Image 1 (tube, one colour):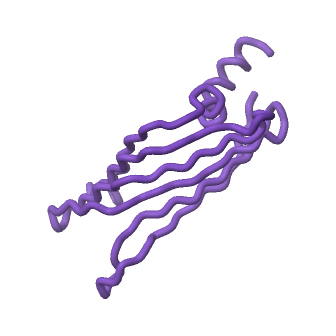
Image 2 (cartoon, rainbow, N blue to C red; image 1 turned 90 degrees about the horizontal axis):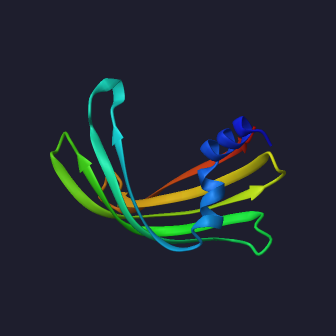
Length: 129
């Protein structure tokens, strides 16, 4: 593998490398801000405790995490505490290709005030060169 390919692979694959390099428990702090049409409308900051690892063959990396999510709504100038969580996995299909999936959820309320869970998902592929 050339130095260019090595640098590209390292830059493009933090998720794949994270399982092998940091197996075990972790803390993840992540903030997602929303700017539709360029105007700030709010932010969600997650403070999660998780666990990640790989299978004994190292071909599958996985993680699960959960904890409080602080949801700020700019219009109401209010911050609510919810619960959020994620579970995901990555599978090395070949030396140059991995596929990954993630399911996430966060607690909340619907328009009538009933408690709900809003789910999201990711499905993708990473090509290393």
